[in-house]
Image 1 (cartoon, rainbow, N blue to C red):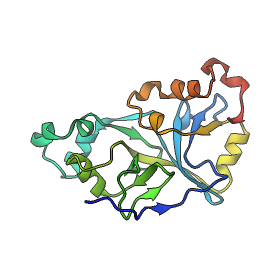
Image 2 (image 1 turned 45 degrees about the vertical axis):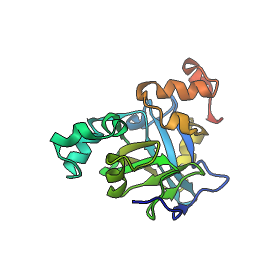
Image 3 (image 1 turned 120 degrees about the horizontal axis):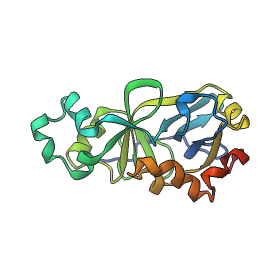
Image 4 (image 1 turned 90 degrees about the horizontal axis):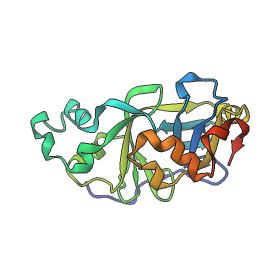
Length: 202
């Protein structure tokens, strides 16, 4: 499938779209304790994002086999980025549904532009293209997502539940998932041991 310029653009100023949300010690929902979320959408009607620092037991190859895209016996022939890709646990909502965040060099009609450099695609075609080496230069896959209703995320931030900072592709597509929490805080100049003294928006 050839990339095109048909991505739906929805990013705008004044929102937390294309930001990282780092769970603070004040986070009341245990499902998000210690999590880092990449916000794909944020507006007056709510927000949607993917947890990026938790992984599933199954890998990307397992997903391809389950969907019938490749045979298990052929998985060794997959491009290295596909063989080595971890599948993130994106959130508690719709956990069987897959989402791919990826670099903007790959765009299809169903892609949503999250930022100038990052898109979200949730169709099986991108999985086929990644498996054949025709996919985006950088990508991560998540099953499930995290969602908020109108005003809910803002209330959680006001209650010291989250710390927000602009996202970077370098950290978003970082393969060392276990260190992401500390690395993103470090990029903000924050020592994790000092989190209890901070609040809100960096």
